[in-house]
Amino acid sequence: MMEYYLTWHNQAKKAYEQAISISMPETYLTKPNGIVFIGMGGSGIVGDFVVALAFDRLNIPVSSIKDYRIPSWINEDTLVISISYSGNTRETILATLEALKKKSKVIMISSGGILKSLSEKYKVPHINVEKGLVPRAALPSMLFTVLASLEKLGMPVVSRDEITSSIENLKLWCSSDETLKESTDIAELFRNSIPIIISCSRFTPLAYRLKNEFNENSKIPVKVEVVPEWGHNDIVGWEKPVATSSMKCLILDCNENMCCEILSFAGKIISETGVECKTLKLKGKSILDKLMYGSLIGGLASVHLAKLRDVNPIETKSISEYKKLIVKLISIS
Ligand code: PA5
Picture 1: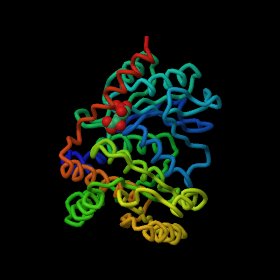
Picture 2: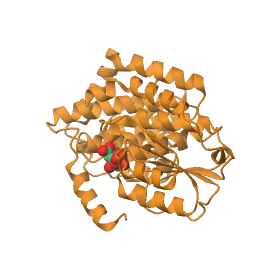
Picture 3: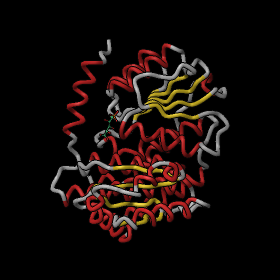
Picture 4: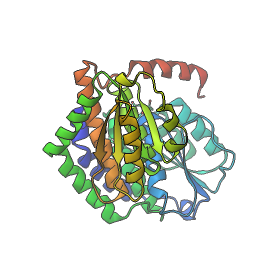
């Protein structure tokens, strides 16, 4: 698992170079009324990342759906990007079928599975991602495929320079001692405790990415809070908190504007109750850099923590159990 994360720069480079050489159907080149991502878990987070990246770059709505239903505004003018690493996730397939029914411009991304067969049946573009990985560890493969596809469609959410420098930075971070130290320190912090991850709203997907990584790799429950919303509800819970001895807090510091001030205020309130807080400074210049750096540190930390807890980071027995239920509930004919 560690090896998957430590070769993320290769994954990102391969995925981007592959997807940038794929041509898109002529009809997909007209500006859509919105972009919708469909996906669950390790595949669904890709859509969340793109929503954050598109925030101040695109002038159409971009949303990420983690459900088997799609909102009623989606129509034939909507670009729908369905992502499932395995290609077999039922919620993703059902929601994609709904989008196909509405004649949306659908692009499918998977390493194979039912999604790939559906793309052949409905004659819509499908882009393969590297096989043989664990979905959550295939983040760069799926994300950089999407970034290249949006660029091909004339709606880049990051510049070429940002892509190139993110790949170079990933390579540096993957081999640096600092990365190892930062990730092992976080694993030590969360040993025998319930993590709380706090970010600013722009980096909400990163906070959730870390939560999911600690859930799936380290097998622990995690709480996420986001500022400034935190200051309007969760803050009150710290007036008389329970079980503080089992909580530890990680603050994701994006080094941007007011966020730092608000996050350090949150850290002060929480640490005054006796909860240890650590700050992770997100490295890099662009939002993409920061998302990738935070994801790399979180991924590695969750694998270190799995080792400390003597659990297998790759196996996710309960997700398999859940998937048996959802396969029964959603039959695909
Ligand atoms: O990382 C994981 O293994 C999960 O979160 C999966 O991504 C999730 O269950 C959805 O499966 P898939 O990515 O194959 O659609």
